[in-house]
Length: 185
Length: 208
Image (cartoon, rainbow over all chains, first blue to last red; front, side, top):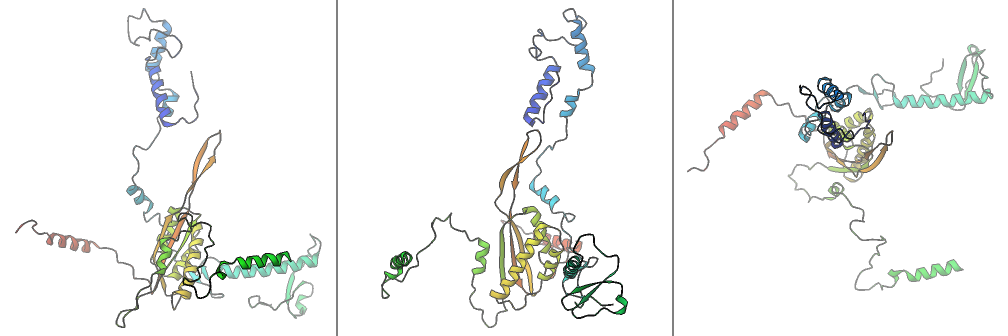
C-alpha cells in the first residue's frame, strides 16, 4: 500500500516512520485487515504454520533494500539550534560587510560626485533632457510617423544661420541660447 | 444672514472671552486633542529628546564642547539586519565621505539614510550653531527594529506560509569636528605586553 503524502510535518513524519517500521517488522497484526497470528521469523525452519506467501513476504522484507519511502525520510536536518553568538560571527564576518568604494571622484564639469568608470549622472541627465526637446522639435517638423528624411540633421540655436556646409542637411531649430557644452562645428 | 448668525453665536461661545483680563488664573489654552490617554498620544522617542538637553554655559578656560546633533527616522520599510550593514559602513566617517558612499550604494536603505543625513546636516546648520556643514562626522549610527506585521504568502497546492513585513528605525548622531583617527590594529607585541602586565598585577588576597 503506497501512500503519497504532501510535505508532512516533522512529528507526523516521525509517527509515520514508526508505523511503517512496525508494519515491516510484523508487530502490527491488525493493519492489513486480519493477518492473525503475526508472521513468524524469516529464518525459522519449522514453518508449518506459515503460509508460503508469508515466507516470501518475510524474506523480502529482511533482505530487500530500504524502500523509497524510508530513504526519502532520511534527510539532512539541523541537529541543534544555532546560538545568536554563532549567528553573529557569521553575519558580521568582514567578508559579509559592505566594502568601502574607493573609485568616487568629483566631476570637473558640474562638481557632483561620479564614479571613475561611469558618466556623471547630473551631466547625463542634462544632455538627455536637451536631446528630448530636440527630438520633440524633429517630430513636430515631420508630423506623420515614418517621415524621417535620409539626410544628416543640424541643430541651430537662437539666431544662428546655416552655413554653406549645411546645404543638404535637415535643419532643426531650438528657440534658446546654445548651451555651453554643445559645441558648434 | 444665517452664516453671520452662526458666526456670531460661535464668537460668543469662545471660552477665552469669558475670563476678564484681570482674572486670577491666566487664559488657559483649551486642548483640541480628543484624548489625553498616554498610549494614544504621539510618543516622542528617547532619541528625539536627546536634542533638547541644554548644558550650562561653559567657563572661559574650558575647551569648547563640540556640537552634537541627534536625528532619526522611524518605521522605514526595510529589514533591520540589512540596514545594520549600511549603518556599520558609515560609522566613524566624515559626513561628506558617508554621503558619497551612500550615493553609489545599490541598497534600498542607502537612499533613506542619505536623506536622513542631509536633514540632520541642515538641522545642524540652522538650529545647532554649526559653522561649517562639512565639519561634521558621524559619531554613532544605529538601527532598531520597528513594528512587524504578519501576512499570508500563498504557495501552490493550497499551502501557505506566514511572512512578516519588517520595518526598522535608523538613528544617527553627528558631532562637530573632523572624524577621529582610526584605531591602529592590535599587534602581538601589545597583546604580550598586556599579558605580562596582568601577571604582574596579581597579588595575594584575603591576607594580612
